[in-house]
Image (cartoon, rainbow, N blue to C red; front, side):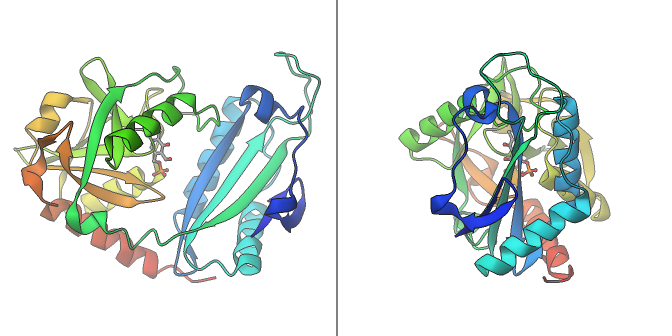
Length: 283
Ligand code: PLP
């Protein structure tokens, strides 16, 4: 695998980062993940705009323009013959003597690499997935896509131990979002509900596109907090992310939800999403 590390295309297994990188010492950095489906970079401009915002929020100058980022992504796809998978981008504040305070003007460390997978061929789409709920242990700026991910590492370990597909995180009674996904339900009164954007959740790019498609389909959309009880009363339950598109949920904490099978609203949104992707030009 060829990565892009500190300005160069290099075999990933030989790539190294200095120990004094603030990304390593403090988790002082941000990241993005964009899906590649049949040679298409999915929702890429929105991912790169969110990267720009994350960087601005923590005071790191964006090292590249949207066009330059896209150029490197395209080159990574070409060099790795990547048709299906993910492109990971990480930017940390840079290398310096260890101190919480940072000097202005450090050179940010950029690391990018591909991961091979078929986002659009997940068997859980057909069978439905299972989730557990866990307390949301994260910090108060979840809108920044920070590389400090210890709470998510712990949530995903609980997912593995429970043998399920994802964890939804709870702030009191309310679901904030998935450990690496945005949470959606369809209520008995046929509203598509997902939590409103704020500092409490990541502004999911797939969330954004799914809402756009849902509007096109004439669905009623309510962006507001919802509770675990709302999930139990929902007719459909699903989550979205760049790396899964969308996954229907049929069980939460061992209890059947969403009628126990993937639902029609999920299916129509998922199919429309993939259809739209295939209208993008392939690289
Ligand atoms: N919420 C969290 C906490 C995430 O980590 C992710 C993706 O990794 C998402 C939501 C989904 O965001 P996106 O659709 O941009 O992948």
